[in-house]
Structures are given as C-alpha cells and as structure tokens.
Image 1 (cartoon, rainbow, N blue to C red):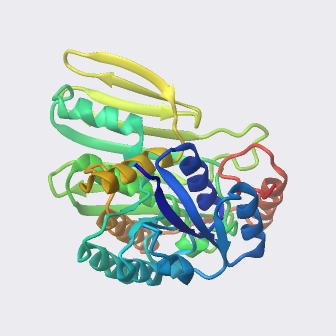
Image 2: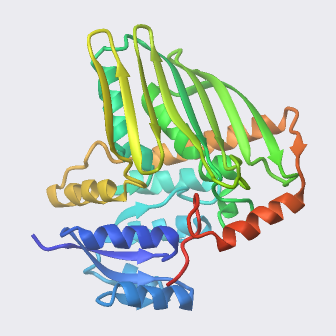
Amino acid sequence: MNPIKIGMIGFGRMGGFYLEQMQKSGRWEVACICDVSAESREEARRLAPQAQVIADEQIIFDDPEVAVVGLFALADSRLSQIGKAVAAGKHIIAEKPIADSVEREWQAVSLVEKAPLFSTVNLYLRNSWYHNTIKEFISSGEIGELAIIRVCHMTPGLAPGEGHEYEGPAFHDCGMHYVDIARWYAESEFKTWNAQAVRMWNYKDPWWLQCHGTFENGVVFDITQGHVYGQLSAKQTHNSYVDIVGTKGIARMTHDFKTATVELHGVTQTHRIERPYGGKNIDVLCERFAQSIESGRRCEELPRFRDAAVASEYAWKFIHDARTHDLPAIGDLRTLQQIRERRRTMKNGYGLLRKRA
C-alpha cells in the first residue's frame, strides 16, 4: 500500500514532533510543509528535503494527491483551515485547541461531524500505554466501582510569556489534557466543580489551579496543574501522578518523563509495571489515524474533535470559577524575569521550547 500523503501547516515545536514520527513510519509521506516563518521553512527544508516547503497553505488544500492535512499552527487560524480541509475533502489531524474560542471550537465540531471524513485531535494522554493499562484494570472489576479520580501535573514547565498564551493560561493550554483524561476515565460529564488558583509571581493570569467536583454518575474528581514547581531550584523536579480509587482497590501511575510506573492493587491481582514513558504519543496517534484511512473504518480509540471542545470548554469554566474566588498574587515579576532568563540558557529542563539547529 502506498504511503498516505500529508500536508503539514505549521512547523513549530509540535510540527517538528509530527514530522519526526511520520518519517519513522512507513505509512506516511510528508508531501508539503507550510509555514509563514522563513526560519521555519528553512528548518523544514533541512529536516525534510523531499517535501515541498511553501508559505501559502492554499497549495496544500488544492493538491489532489494530499489526503490528510495536519493543522499544527496557531489556534486562531485553525477554524478557517478546518473549513478549507472539509471543503477540499481532506482528512484532518489537529493540535488542540481546535479553535481560539469555545464558540469557534463547537463550529469546528459541527463542520467535521457533518463531513464523511476522518478527523482527530492530539489529546495525547488517551494514547498512552499507562492510562490504557489502568482503564483495562478498572474495566476488569478489580477495584470495584470507580469512585475517585485524582490527577496531578506540576512541573517547572513553560513560564508565562514563553509562547503558549494564545491558548490561554497554563490550566487551559496544558491542563485541558488532564480535564480530558479525568472525563475519559469517568465516562461521564462534569456536574459540579469548585476551583482555587494562584497568580504566582504576581502574573496577570493564574499559573497554578486545582479543581475538584463531581461527574453526573457520582464519580468525584480532583485535578491539579501548574508550571510552578521549583522553577529556580538548583536541581529541578516535578510531581505528576494519577490516583484512581475504587470501592475495593486502587490503581495509580507516576512518571519521571522517561519511565512510567503503574501500580495495580485489585482484589485478586497486584501488579507493578514499568515501561518507557512515551512522551506525546504522537506515534500512536499517527498509526491509528493511518489505520483508519487504510481500512475505511475509524479506530475507536482516536480522540474526536468533540472531546477536545468539551475539555477546552471545561478548562475555561474551571479558570472562570477560580476567578470568582480569592485569587492571591504571590511573589513578584522580578522572580518571573529570573525564571525566563534561566530557561533561555538551559540545555536540559521541563517544557523548553525547541531551539533551531
């Protein structure tokens, strides 16, 4: 079977990740790479010499040989690009969020759900081996009825002002992944919530947020996310885990960004599993999407645009709820500037923006 031809729009950090994984797979051919930045186009020519590198995205939509469009540019251009892809009859892989406002995200959902095309979005936690291992254990009945979902992700990651703020504060840009995975586990919709946040370093937006509440099926959730964890520590660390509590047993996961450890404590089975973490799991997403196109049947594990819209909407709702409560500002902007300066020169760290070679 011939490789599936894809045209990529946007060749920043995420576009580079997709190119790397697609080049490793025998199922994809990166036919076109589009970016408005001359520097990004030069990098694309270096890394993908066989691809057509362009500045005009319309060339991709007009090319009858391109079967899939990869939307990896800024969110404010995504709805227009989704509309063009649907009109051109092209399948879509998109980064989240699928548009730059909740209203436009639901417009994007409407566009793809009416079209006889495959579409997916990179809600990468759903593609991870560790979450799928835990969910299978839950489904086996080993922990009894699902009761409590606790998700925590605190790192010295992206600092305010480093380039992702067009997607909102940290809890929207990054935290929507944890909102999504909690809903994925619960298999239900959010019912109640109460959020607390902190404006760390006196920055205008909260950079740490914790939200707890319930789903419609009665499952309780607690989500914590923030890039505030020891930003100026001599040796940086993080605190990331998932803790699933049932009426009879538990399942949990921790990771160090290299190795993920899953512990399963059920009524008849106890397991400890260690495997490579897997990063953004883009390889899994791309393989499942290729399988869908080749077979003509959607892989059910693929995240849908609707899932991304729900996660985005509730991340914003939780941020709004936090703003209605006491929102303390702790620290000062001088410390934030120290953090930014340190991250510019760091070679190893959390969430560092990819430097061009």
